[in-house]
Image (cartoon, rainbow, N blue to C red; front, side, top):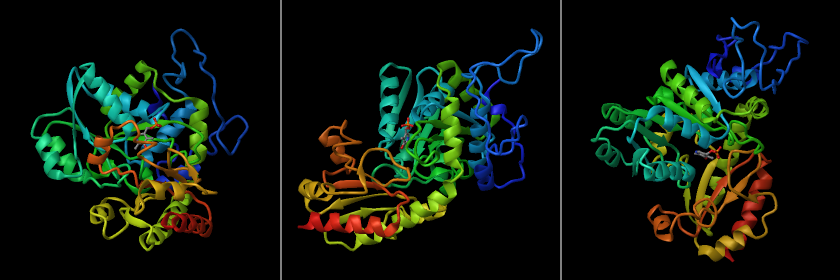
Length: 395
Ligand SMILES: *Cc1c(COP(=O)(O)O)cnc(C)c1O
């Protein structure tokens, strides 16, 4: 048995209500409102002739199943597998859905850990991989003129917020015989549902918006068909990638507030974008909500909100970056994103430090680029903090 057989107790509820109420009122022993946590690694067999619904927690766990069911519903999929990390979700997907030396096509600007995984698997001749500028449909079409097994899409991309047309890439990928996997981490299930746009599988780093509080590393794979979902669940169990019960419970708690969080995250991002766009210290702002962003119309079509991640370039180079970052009081200089606290990253020395300077330049990541993940702090405090930092940067 695997997590995917977790039953949805109230299929008539909207996805959002379900996120808020996931697992509430399911405790039959004491009637606890909040669901019980099942840390037990194992479950009793009634007899040697009968298997219990859950037997061993790597294969299936009631708390993890509750989270899986909720995420499947929110992404409009039929089944989900919860993993110990976002990269675990991507590993399970690649192992489940490719054969020996299966051809994988992925974006040049995919998440760095995804790039490393695919590159290393290719070095071991487990798969063949081609990285393409997926946001450029001519490039995607050129790569997908050759048959493929798996095509990755990640939109918006990190850190320049490039937007990829999920429906158009899915058409090209399906014509090439491929399964389409969308990494929906940056949008969360609230702002974009790739399965309804034509993708076959969605992966999440639940570490980010889904848990939302920067205190659990986790992942999930949501599938459009039961067949794909079974393969992913099988490989997640076989490889030992499934998530823990405590982490699942905490992630469910975080997920209950995702709608409220996303509204504040996005309002804060919009206010900060306006400040950045009108300040002399700033050379460029990359945010899909700006009408001048090349992916704006597409993002408006395929997303229901523009999210709370953005990047910007300062006019004064690396010295301006130092003046901007030295003296920040409420915005932490840290990697990761999607938490309640605002985080600032300097891609050239942090998230993208592993790339050569030439590769970074080719990817458009200059030393003057900063990425912001807006949290849910009061907007005036954020604006004051960023205005002071910009004034320092211009000096
Ligand atoms: C963080 C992240 C991942 C990896 O997730 P982990 O939980 O850190 O393993 C994958 N994709 C994207 C877009 C991410 O931001």
